[in-house]
Length: 87
Image 1 (spheres, helix red, strand yellow):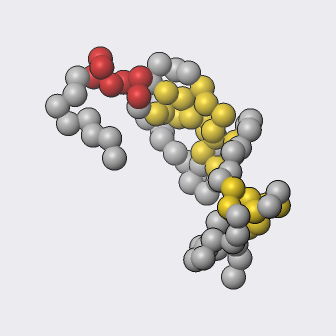
Image 2 (image 1 turned 120 degrees about the vertical axis):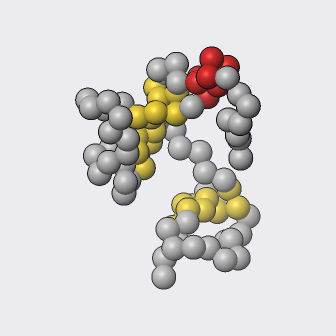
Image 3 (image 1 turned 45 degrees about the horizontal axis):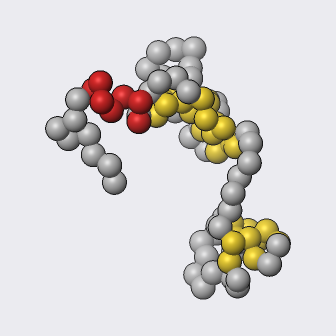
């Protein structure tokens, strides 16, 4: 995990992520908001407290066989097929 310890703001702000909001300091809420870097460059990600949206290409790791211990909701791309783990 990256750390900001002993780093100066001017050398790290571009690496920080923020959300677009009509209210300053609102953070993540139940409404999906676009994610930006510290320079204001937008990403294809929109995030809320209960949703992740990708406006663009989503690349998934491909497996040759099913993962041994999937968690409910895990995605796997196996032999050109997309699988979602369920109960």
